Length: 252
Image 1 (cartoon, rainbow, N blue to C red):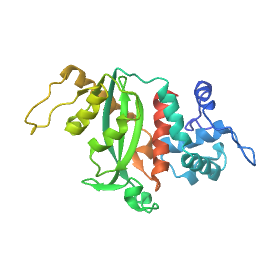
Image 2 (image 1 turned 90 degrees about the vertical axis):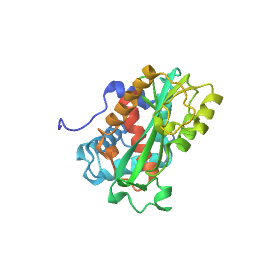
Image 3 (image 1 turned 45 degrees about the horizontal axis):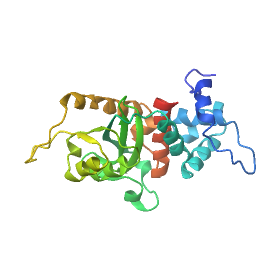
Image 4 (image 1 turned 180 degrees about the vertical axis):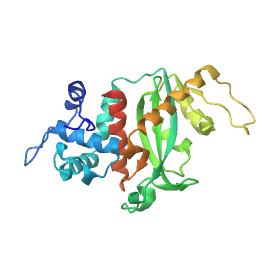
């Protein structure tokens, strides 16, 4: 067996297995552990689904399982359930990162906007918006096109988790609407002021320095080559990839 192949350890499998669906209909599913290991190998290596090594089983089985469970939201729910057991409510941080969209990511149903592909200075790309806990572990994820502004998405994102005591963000999140939303939730913004703000807000520079943790989290996420570059036409498939990778890095 090649040492370059990825296999879930016994400890990792124990954490995953109880969250997997049990409503099997028709033909019995092939070995879940082997198939999921194959899916993770594709995400890490960045290879085409058709090039998935034979050790994991038929490539069509690997892809069909991934796509079917992405359609049912199983990968996203796996991430949310695992992240929900370990999140911190004292300090959270918010940020976003751009991901280049490969030409194979074009052509999804509903057009680019519906499939979270947009144009910015860097060309066609997707934007990953995320919340992390105080340790830099991702706890909530959303996708938009690369041209989307951070603040409107931030308001949707913070409603997905319990309100923390403090929220760290960079200048992109310095908006009156977001600050008001955080205040209503009992959260103190730790956000620097834009240069054109007439009435600056005070913030803790000491706490703000912890933001490197979420930036580091995005770097770890992009160690998965199918995350660092988007090849999926459907936003739900790319979101599923991001959620599975995030679950593996921090929660499995």
